[in-house]
Image (tube, rainbow, N blue to C red; front, side):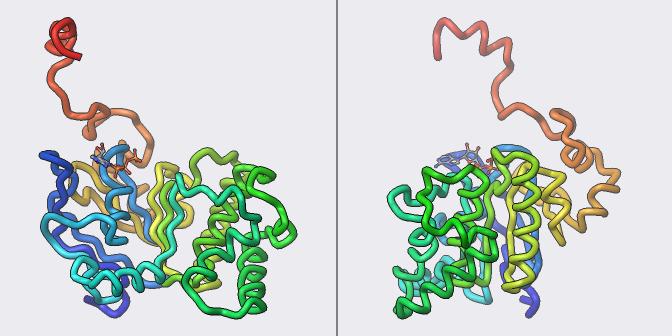
Length: 270
Ligand SMILES: Nc1ncnc2c1ncn2[C@@H]1O[C@H](COP(=O)(O)OP(=O)(O)OP(=O)(O)O)[C@@H](O)[C@H]1O
């Protein structure tokens, strides 16, 4: 594995029941850069992040983070590795009964023995970075959607992770909040020299911040390269995706029997 690679996914196979989600995926996520994982809905992007974080186990293949095989670590070593990973999941809500300050302090209190004064300093630095130092006494119910996402971002970077994984960071945001988040993700990356993986449907925003993009479809890497090389790609599957056309070589429909057969069988089965 090259020194400049933080996460290496090698021949990944993963099934959900009988259904293959990944059938031989190879990825190399470079250190200190922003890598986007894109692809049609249901293609397995969130699943991939969970595999990298060791929450799911591959059926075949290997995932290494900083040279260590994630799925061969002891529980304790995996726990230590997770401390070095920040995750911002779309569903990752704030703790509603804790203030903004305490939400960001939470991982520091759980994972470190830092004295109170130092916790305060770290929390204020992270809140300053997301522009919400002045909002530290507010409760989550007093925040807008965009502010909530920014507090979650400050919490995700509280422990200065080497790797941060964003799952759909822009979903449900208005254009201004989206712009703020795009700028923040970029600036956090350079300020704290983190490696980032972004999973997103928001093509324009994601291409504007990613250094490298992987497009995954049908269980494999369909294309990879810089945002500009993908924008210029003549591969019809890539251009279908990048231009946001709903149907094309990559089907809109989840695999199923023919619609006609299904309709005529409607009275027999659900
Ligand atoms: N817990 C689960 N049990 C069984 N199947 C699951 C489970 N979670 C996800 N799947 C299936 O795995 C596939 C990949 O899901 P995943 O959420 O990773 O896709 P995604 O690319 O992130 O989708 P989207 O872009 O729509 O969020 C989907 O077909 C989904 O139905």
